Length: 166
Image 1 (cartoon, rainbow, N blue to C red):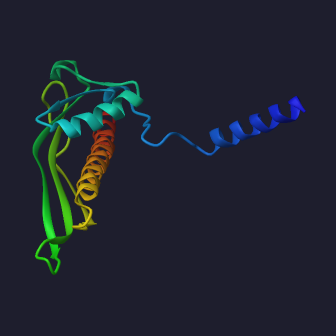
Image 2 (image 1 turned 180 degrees about the vertical axis):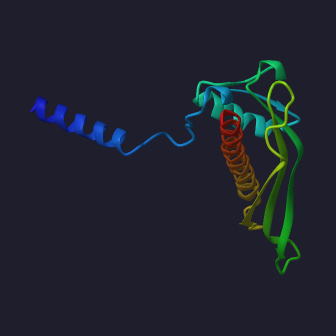
């Protein structure tokens, strides 16, 4: 019976590793991306990128000279827009818009790519009878937007680093 359980466990483990399964958010990064310096990024974006780097055994550099890649945030903005108003005159549907414009440099201040832009929009229903729950929902949506922006930024950083190698 023990041998059967061991075989089932071994087969399950082999199937998971063979299909490319990995934890969500974990990223395999080249060495040059494991040490990034962020210039003028918001604390939310820094937190998300730092989490990604930590899962890849990387870190945010304390100075541009130590970094394999420098990310200069030129503009970052998140805004709420009311999409519809209910009969009581209060918003019933809102939209969060996130805008990020940035550029990549190496640690010698050489431009690696032209300016890049990321724009993300999320709509959500704003039920006025559950105000506290909706405030919490907006915070969760904001966090997800920053996570998505960090993933997109790191994907583009990977392309920038690949261009250097070629």
